[in-house]
Length: 397
Ligand code: PLP
Image (cartoon, rainbow, N blue to C red; front, side):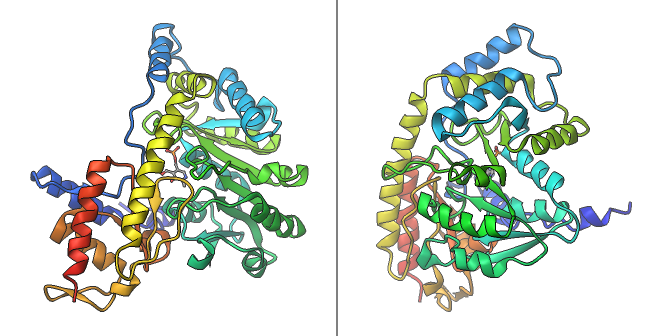
């Protein structure tokens, strides 16, 4: 059967090959330590699960408005006001099936064929495919490791053309864990306003911040930037709710309406029960989030110390999310028992085959000098995995 050009244009995830190999090894009873994980290893807090169960019992099992229930939209509005100092109305919110879906919808309603979307690299892998699916073209700007992988106003200015429509920002970042400060966002904001481009600001890791850092949304810098920004967020990472599939946007009302209308012809509403649970997540006690952040920070500190001590490896200190993105290029050209390491993908493959540690090679995020290590796994696993990597690297010649 003939497939559409659209379908043929989608690249399979470059992380899939290593991931399926790791799964196969695990199925064969081999103890693989996985640093490849993209979700919190904690359980959804009890009060949120209870709210989901209560919703089922109360019969909240029917269609809701396509863009989300008023109750959830109000909880989201309250969250933005209380946590981000941003005033939105419920008609400026659209709830979707995870932040990934919110991003997909945002590109669909904003971009035309021929438009350009500026995408700072390293970038999360789905952006590039979603941009392609909207008909637009991704313009990748490599952010420098010595600037903590953050885009500078000069780099942004240089990438802008008359066709630029959108800048994608992701802070805290997957895969680098970098976090933009208010000053850095304000400086980017000047360029954004000068050229009248729209920002899609993916803030899904907002609550996973360390070293006492607070989250700053670019929309909160000025009323003009708020008008130019679509904030994407959700409950997946903050509340360990990846399987519930609830994400949302806050945007100018016509954009939120366009997203709801688009969604009304594709998925319809996100699951009613998950929406009810998300109200509990946003309105309820936040202790579980604080406890999770405390544990993540301990792991980050331990992992960063160990990884930075590995000879030849450099790793900027990530202030957020749950990833480290060390540069491993010092090992290129070396070999392990006769097997040559040309790039980070070779190294990640060898880690899996030789010492059973799974990690995602940087090529998946647009930079093959690095490997992404997730610390969304137990301290015990982190110690064991790093012991294995340390031993492996010592044997490279
Ligand atoms: N944005 C980034 C940067 C992510 O890393 C992820 C998930 O890995 C998402 C969005 C999607 O989150 P959700 O599970 O809400 O779709």
